Structure formats: structure tokens, C-alpha cells
Image (tube, rainbow, N blue to C red; front, side, top):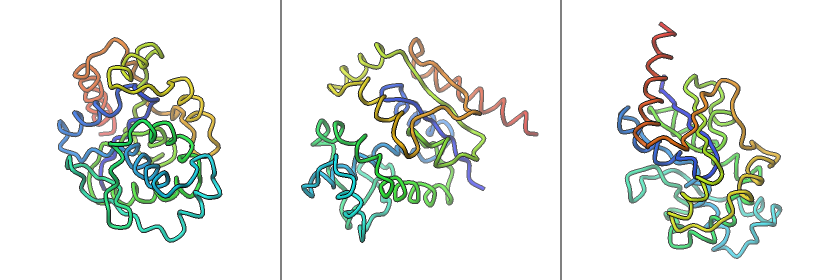
Length: 215
């Protein structure tokens, strides 16, 4: 049975950096679920569909050919109609729309199915907003990363991103399908004052402790 380490949390809490480094330490594949949603959002925008129109998005999902392929950085990436979407070059508009697209049930169903299929065949460190609550609720390895809003705003600004943290948090936590929330059995880590290595070391310590407890 494959090992699944779920890392959830709000935007700019450090999930992506932590998941990437942790996966290297564990010799696992790193899966950024948010990148899949952003790729699909790019496809929706390129198709001329209003991201605020869920009915149109649902319709666009019918017959869509999508799978996971190896992306430019060696990580799993969403391939749509045999193409890897170039959403990075449209990052600002994609980031502004992705929370709306991610509320559509057909979108979440597609991405969840792809993530489960991928993780069924290999060990993964997977990060997102509903990995431990909706995608893999049965994994014993669940972590929720958080940080103060001010720290998260600073991190987004350092990345050159200007989307509103507050608006993103509201959309993610109030959506009807798989909202951002803390799994009851997740370990919560505040990354505000921790270095990247500090967060990774803490997760590794907790994983080791958890494994010892189950023996």
C-alpha cells in the first residue's frame, strides 16, 4: 500500500516549498494539486468561458480528455487534450479565477479522481486545500500548515503576486464542495516563524513518531 502524506493549508502558508523538500527527503513523488486546478483554470480561460459561470464550466467538462503527465520540472502535471497548459505565463489572471473554477463539482470530481489514481501506484507527498479532508481522508499522515495573514501577504508579494489573501481565504473556506478546513486528525504547524528546513524537520519528526506509535 502506498504512503500518502497530505499537506493542506491556505495560500502562502508554505505548502509547496515544504512538500517539494519533504518529498526529496522521503524519496516520494511531490504532487501539487493546486497546479492541476490552475492548469484547468487556464484551459477554461483560454476557451473563453467565464470562470464565474459554473454551468458553462460543467458543460466544458463533458468529454474533456485529461490525465496526469510529467511536467517540465519533473512533477505530475495536468495534460488536457494531449497538451500541457502554459498557465505560468498567465499566472495573475489564473490565480484570480482558480478559486471560482475550483468550486464547480465536475472540476473537483475530475481532479480528485486523477489524484487518487496517481497515488494508488506510488508513494506521494501531496499538497492542497482538501487533501486530508476530501481526497485522502483515510491517510494517517495529515498536516495542516498555517501562518499569520501578514506573513502570507509578504510571501505572496515576494513572489510578485497581488491577489487578495483575504478574498482567497474566504472563497476557499466557504465553497460548498470540499472547503478548506482542518482535518480532525491533522497535525497543525504554524510556519510564521519557522524556516523551510524547520517545518520539514518537524514533519519528519512527527512522521517518525507516528510510525513508531503504530508498531
